[in-house]
Length: 304
Image (cartoon, helix red, strand yellow):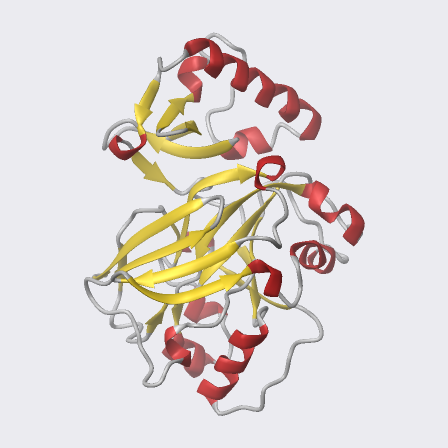
């Protein structure tokens, strides 16, 4: 299934939805009268694996029974990030595609080295923005905003020291992430957290596709377009560290909790790696897409 957070009209509180073809089903409405029915994606995830399986079956049955009642045309609703406020930082992988590692090294005048262990950093929870939100860029903070399309992973089952063979069993589903980056801040601070963590710099969504429906996470195409021009066109099969290895490494000695979000790295084609370099300016529209999930469409606006 494809889960989302939406509201039928501007100004209304976000609620849990299921995307059913061209329509979004209002889950709290179809589950009205059911005790403790989930109101958000996170509350569904936090029910735990066994209870969640039964709950999702109940949701599917209620949707089937209701037909198009309590549903809205997808283009008419207000979309939110499926996890609008993660409970902690978004985990991120750097340099997880060899061609991107090469372009990054060249842009910085460094010797290229393929990572032998995952390069991990984080983005603050305040970076998360909706799949179609404008991203307001404080130009007092950065003049070099770059794009990065990434496959996002949402943990469904808490675990520590997770074996690679079991890693994908801990995944609730997958989403699209644009790991927007302030390259000048990265360069100034000699690390990535600040340059990756400006407000709004993690557009996410439009849905979370459950792991059973999404299939093999290493078999998906990723694309990024700026003002309609293709900038990135990659494939998750080219990850240096696939999703199961990422989860194995992250969970070594550290608990991954249900609801945690992981951004798995970006393929080549970022603005920093181009000649001449390209960065996002006021009014640019960035579309980031992962096969089988959907498209984020975010306009960059100068603001504070």
